[in-house]
Length: 124
Image (cartoon, rainbow, N blue to C red; front, side):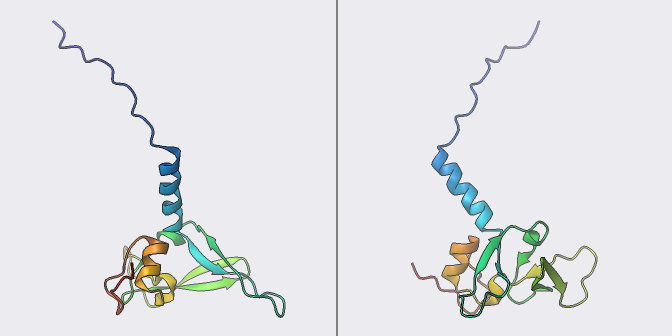
């Protein structure tokens, strides 16, 4: 005869809206790049925007073994320029924050602490 019947399971309960928003915020903030606005009018403070840029957001961080350099804003374009020859299949890495961020800023902005850098301490 037929095997044992399995009772249908209720669908999983969704997490709270607040926890889903926290997760979504971290997912976005960990992949965005801070891009300087075009030069402001004389006397105006410079501005920047956090942008989620397809493909560029796939570049990982490495403080010493980077092989790509964000070109900065050139008109409406932001490009990653090879700092050296990149072999086929090689991962493209950039320095998040230009390699200048402290460990606490790396944690706050990207969700991890870079243990390869000179500043391995974290102020809590």
